Image 1: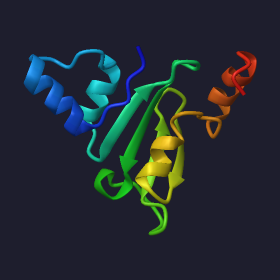
Image 2: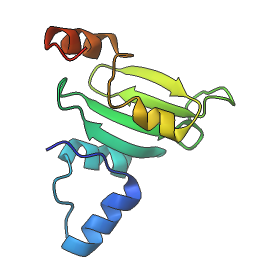
Image 3: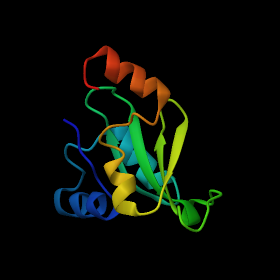
Length: 110
């Protein structure tokens, strides 16, 4: 199951159920261990782990107008965004990652 979670959601699930249900273990680890990580999901087509970071909190270099960074953890590609909403949207179709794009094309998803 593909799940998009934020750190607060993960905490709430853990608090309520004693553990996070249906949360990819790799995403849970990334959200727990990486400063600035605010959302994570495993893409259903490419199987890549995609994470949104608050660039400032994560200590990433960024321009003032592009504070948010979406990262393909699997292939090591990053793309800046001007808002958190746009960064999260970019997780849906990671064509900005050349390797994910190749997989999406090969599987007919692009």
